[in-house]
Amino acid sequence: MQLEELMNKYYKKLNENDFHILKYILNHKDSCYKLGIHDLAQKCNVSRTSILRLSQKLEFSGYSEFRVFLKWEAEKWGDQQKVSNSFSGLMRDMEASLKYLKNTDMQNICKLIDEADRIFVYGSGTAQTSCANELQRMFVARHRYLTVIKDKIEFDLMVPDFKNTDLIIIISLSGETPSLIPQAQTLSAKGIPFISVTNLKNNFLAQLTPYNLYATSQAVTVYQGVELTAFAPFFLVGEALFRSYIDYVDQKKSR
Image 1 (cartoon, rainbow, N blue to C red):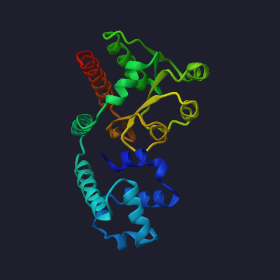
Image 2: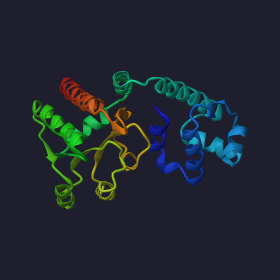
Image 3: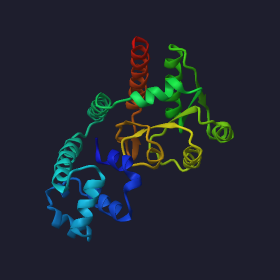
Image 4: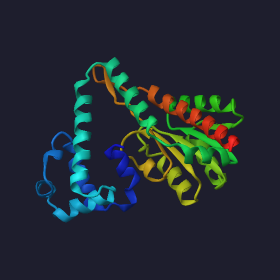
């Protein structure tokens, strides 16, 4: 699990002081793990106790264990920085996504899909909607019929009619799309379960629900000043979700 993922998972435990410390750590991934608790506290202008409490809020036994985790993060981040060409970058993203999926238990998410009366999928952009359409196509084979929400206007009109027996899957690259946040907040407030599928980073959408899936996709420069973010990892996450659902249903039948 990466630091951004931990921030999403334990977001409700964290206070302003914690985010101040985490901001420093995220901005100094290559060096902060070298600092002892006293030195890190000085860099962040906080007390040693604040660093220790943050470590424990993130479910580490103490700063020593957190520091080992930060060293692992730094080494991984350093390896990513060495990759410069576009194709190698894509391979790195796919490998990182595969590693994440291999270590992710989707049982609770599959249970939601299996028990939902209705399932809706919304993609916050053109590529995200393509991922939603592909997810819909796959689930038809198992007679689970997903309704793809075509655009924001349609989503806005449908939100008041959603029930807590429904399930919404939201696919967003950043998880921070301003036009998407009000709908997600409404779903959360009404107790309507939704699954977020976002890039692996600390993001607001993932903080609103415990049902998170992540893809790893770093933007690469493909022309002068033009960046492109690959969506192949998002399709991979969708495929993994469908295959996990097949396994879940088959195991349920064999009990």
